[in-house]
Length: 418
Length: 72
Image (cartoon, rainbow over all chains, first blue to last red; front, side):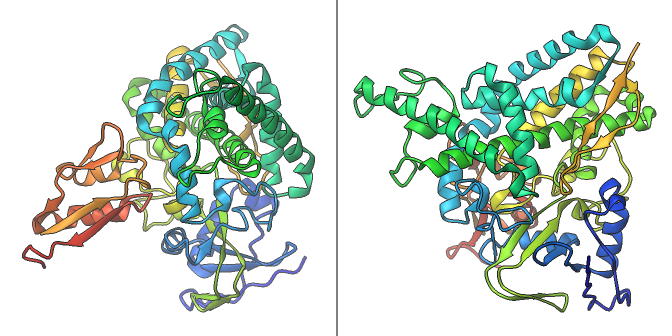
């Protein structure tokens, strides 16, 4: 594997920096590498892939990239590969096409709708704990953190709850496909076939009902939920979503909304239990739950970084980047940049909420996470139930990280209680 | 004086602005998600509103200097 490093920023006088995002050391703990990148090599070039991968690590550069969608396009997708998969996802559009589609989808993700959804998430969390409480131990990823967003996705879309095992399988495969597209080709196709069959059934039902112009088919002749909205309502430009768009948006919600929310829950519990004085403090001060979730987002963002491609050649810190390069913004590095907050490498449970929300866990700008409210609510609810129901919780064995190199979450988190 | 505009198609009620300038912004009843309750703002609140503009994760807030006002 050949690696080349361009260091033109004179601040550290470094001539070489050996950063490989797929190396075991970086996968296990990327923060030391990020700190070196920020200090010595703010524009890094990694050539260990099929094509060059540039990496931006400083807060100012991450922010600048995310703030300028005209220069930094999403048309080749947010992953490190120039993927043709999932053409209809919001993450593959730029404004103004992006704005139109995002506007069409936003309703169920706004605070009021999310608040109305909270009792259902709370009830689900409680029933999951009911299921394993008597065992005295659990694997928190599979038994608790993963079923929560999968069920939320299923209900939000208005799909049969019995199909959840299938969604979980697709979510995992498609998430891995963000990095290794070839490993997910069959699964994209299967999800597409499934989704389009549901869309066709809804459109057929709508046509058969012979509705007037003012009649809304959603919740009357077709089930409530976002899939019916996608199938039966017209976008702001007067057109129905195409097959690619419906499939792309469903896949996006599955990928962007599942493992990330799961990671938020596992990462938070992991940090609280690895230094159990934190857990005990939260038991004593349960009002800190929102602050702790926010600090977890900042300290351990579930997505380490995403890519943009530049529509024109650009020079950053003296490094020339040719047009259409894959250029990654490291969200977690920005979150640990001393320009963001005081002592960024310390996990502090009581950082003020408003100030601490300036982190980049949800990205920034055009593609700022549409599900941010839902993710926060789900994680706060999940953690709130745990501290009440299982106050004796402790780690019960080694944890493992997720396989995908640019995701950051515990894939295995064994816990026990007495 | 200057004017504050929230793009109704872009705003998603992340509500950072309300934290920085609660006298200017308010969570709306429906659409647009964030209401500007003080559309014409005095210079003494410029720093707070600029902070809200800078911190809006959707980049949905814009400032327009009011041609009829004192300007800056």
